[in-house]
Figure 1 (cartoon, helix red, strand yellow):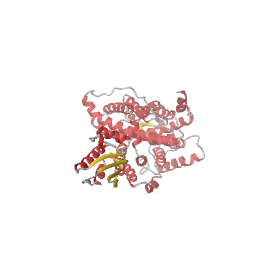
Figure 2 (cartoon, rainbow, N blue to C red):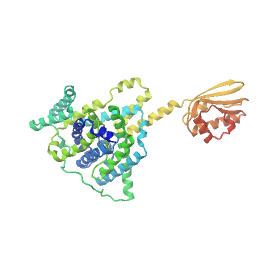
Figure 3 (tube, rainbow, N blue to C red):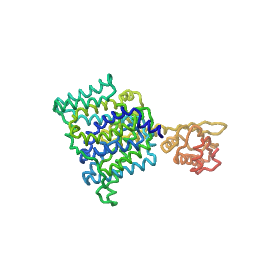
Figure 4 (cartoon, one colour):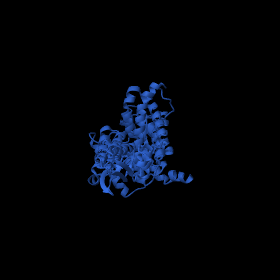
Length: 483
């Protein structure tokens, strides 16, 4: 226990604290922007980012991953806030947390293994494109000074690490270029242009809504959507961080942790959130490996607001936009183009449809679910090919079945048979086949019945242990049919 605490909290504390500070600075404009998307006060997003980051650092399953208020969740609650107000948003966030806790208890993290690699590639690339597109409003059509700040920021992030690595390059860019702006001025937009910041801590509240079944009917659809979207983004981001750090994390613990964080956040005037791939990448690339980085990001975010709010609002947006552009470049999987040349066409289609749906809907969960659906359809089609061959042995006919027999393959299997009077014993050999479901058993019953209706004697042979078990449980055949 002590060793685990040291490993998850005290490894390279200086590096993790510095990484958390960088992330905190990047969280501020994101949280404000997401609040504006949701139609609420900027402090709702800032409080959520502070609370979720701090809480998840203790109860989450993935060290060094950043969770906060996110655009994916914010987009879902726009109609709720518009029609019913912010108090209903707080109530929906609490219910969102409860749903995620329940899903975590039922080990929803195990479902992650059913997400194919092609969907993962599409998810990562779509997210990188979305982050990049979101930065364009802070770069183009503003001023010449904005372009200069973006170019210098990107140059610092690429050049500085080659010569100096003790301080994360994004932090150097933020401090140096913000200082230049404060002392010399420039025609650029700043964090303060996104919304006002109050220098106050969040306080405990009880959402001011009627506690009735009618209220539950209103918020439940939103809470369920928020919970699913939040978990999909969080678990996929956790897998990405796992791969980037060569470590393993508990996805079920992360699910419960996300639920706890959102549940508490709703009682302190915050909106729902989840893991953030952009900020998580910044954190990991800044050298973070422990929970201390996530905790620092949340605490320093609040310190910046309370103690240095007047300075924070002066941070030029092109600096933060430049940092996020570099993040998107490093997040995008550039091996995708080689993958598209070599991978099966169905896998390429799944990857492209995942990207297209995510970009069209701005909803990561819908894109991932669609990708998994198409992947499952293609997989079922691929394995639904069953071959049947016939051979005359010792004056008896033997039909050999080869393949996976289930609901999607039984039609093609039966179509290959000719049911007629052979005046001989017929042996159905399943030594190279496997029966998966009740549809397969029903197909066996149908074949036996059709052959016997023609006056043949039929035997079912060479079933493996699992297939024999399901046949004995569900089939209408007699013991004499099984050999």
